[in-house]
Length: 397
Ligand SMILES: *Cc1c(COP(=O)(O)O)cnc(C)c1O
Image (cartoon, rainbow, N blue to C red; front, side):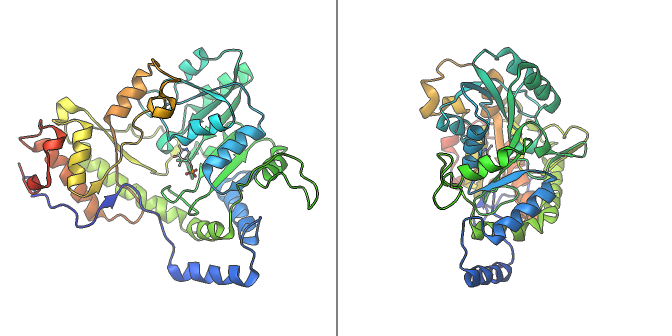
């Protein structure tokens, strides 16, 4: 029996920023007001950095105003030049950061299980111009760490991870930021953990600390000396205040995500044509960053785009992360015309990210699952997306 579908009264977005109790934030604001120290490595930023290093179990780290600038500056600090092998299946910022450093992205295809860069293809793509690998722990699932490490060592390449999705993830008890030469975390409002906007680099070589800290502050050594042509990418006290309050609740927020994810998976796993991401590899402690499904049109009865449109009618704003793949964006299209990447393209055509955030309620997850289920059962499910309108809302099979 399929229950009649009532659309949500208010839109359910794919993500929703976690917020601390307002009075806690206001109390923090009062201390900022008293000090009148708003940015430039203030006391809250310094404390936040220490707490993050402890949480991430990292020896070295630098905070930034966002993850994209962190990545741009990290690439620059490592002195990377020429070609960088990377993934087409990620948020655009990953390859934008290469372009801002005049580096050429070399896109290689992903593996179909956890959607990260395929190490065999990475090795095959190495040329004398290759200087680094920039891999992404997409959706918080770790890349094939050992294989990438082996390839990077063998060919003398720097290995960077865009760990924007992977805050709090561990592999066999090792924190995710301990792999490779450098990892970037994003603390954007929509991520598992955030500081409104924000970013962090953790890295292996202690010599990078000073270089990164100069680069994000115009290269200033002191009032009269500028050592590097830096930029401005400093985190503010307000960001650190938000981040510190949320870091206190990180375990609780990830646990809530786990409970919601398990419920989604239990319900959606039995719907024909809905494919769940494989369970995490053993030894992986997840952060439940995204709730993804792959839609198999023939079995499900409608394609991903139709399901996406129908969910919109129900006021569920699912997102197609990541569609299209990076080289298909207008700004890159001509540069990468004819590039194949069959796995990334196939996944990008089937993937759908459903709403998930730590204070989403279980009843809402159930309603979203009912909606997906009803799309499978509906008799008119082969109708083109544009014909599915609000009029049909409330139909049951
Ligand atoms: C969010 C994100 C970024 C960019 O981080 P910002 O903090 O928003 O600049 C980079 N890469 C990936 C994979 C992301 O999801």
